Image 1 (tube, rainbow, N blue to C red):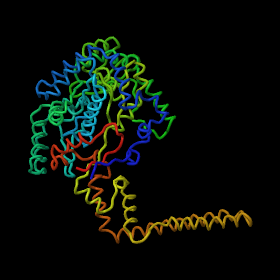
Image 2 (image 1 turned 90 degrees about the horizontal axis):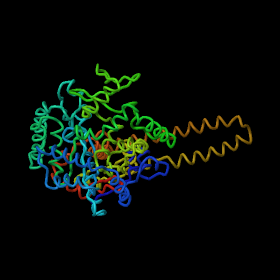
Image 3 (image 1 turned 180 degrees about the horizontal axis):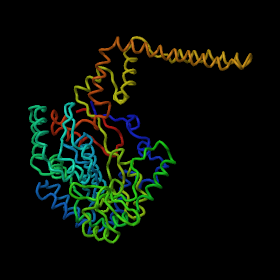
Image 4 (image 1 turned 120 degrees about the vertical axis):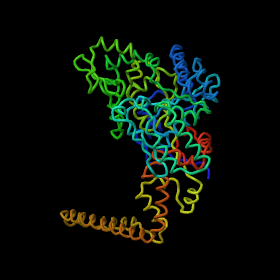
Length: 537
């Protein structure tokens, strides 16, 4: 079966805001710079090239060379790092948390989307070069969001270090205890060559590196280094130094909150259903120290670190920022700006939730005169094995039906395969037509009877609804074997009634298909197609 597609809206899993963005709804135009199309990148290149300093390129390359020193980049990655010195080189970025063993499947789809877009840009703009970047979220502190992965329907969870250590930046977490996860993983995985590759990757990443940053860099480099992916850890003093002027503005002028609050209000006026992803604080920076990542707050001109005894006056804080910029960490509101300040970036690729908060930031970027990148929704994929595809065909299940919620999916299939039509739509229509005549009679005789007629209509329609549901339930029981088969198949492809890509780990597929799986993703995923992909492997 060939690769198939379904619209993001049709899946029912994407917000109104994101669907409207993909439709380029006119009312949303003020909230982004340029919609990501090959043609629009021409102006994006010119805009970024005009303002991005050579100094920032030099610092970036120096830092990346240091970060790759111990793992040995591929030749293409090494070349991409060198290319970043050139004023004609630009980046495409995706970012993600340091999930254990990459976490959910969509991590791979983010990376592949990023790699493939740089290839498409190179074909279109051959006088420039384009480097795919994976931004490691090393300064996050949500340990419970990253300490597990799902394999064979089981949750493999890392207990991690003690509470104090796990409350700081996750990238610094020591990898102790991951040998126990590895042992359990080895007991559950198969014995083939691809399974052995997975064992080797896990062991070399997590048992031979001292912290989560180094482990993740090693693993992702093993998986995608041959595609030229460049991995960056922005928690570096030299990079943070480039961001000091913007952090000063955030600390002492609280520059982002005003603009973001106004944008949120404007989005709500366009459509109240637009879910606001993130609300800004007065100061959108954290303070970092060993085992600590806490908010910086200001009260009556005094600055402090929330829930600690660390405090400064304005002059002391300014001096501390200039001497130790590495101790200041952007939060979700200011991290995008940090990214665009230190990278010659054209486009950010993310999921629906990420793009929703990026859409809050355009006016803030404008205020600090930093070009706003194109925003591209990452590829989303439902991966179907050949065996599953044959079952779908045998059961006459379409891909669009698979995306229905469980109750609707089963009801629709029972109606399709049943030898009786359990749909009282025609009977309800006939009943309503009969009651129209009764309403007419009540109008010309005694209008006080209209309420009684309405009550009787509602009662009889409810009776038909109840009878329809009882018959459907009885038919489900009669067809229990078929219902069980279609339910089991949907469970396989939508674990926990959620998108596969948000639940399963890549090892579930790699164990059987190996490198072919990643090569298929690289071949089939078109980041600019703006469709949900159903991929038969």
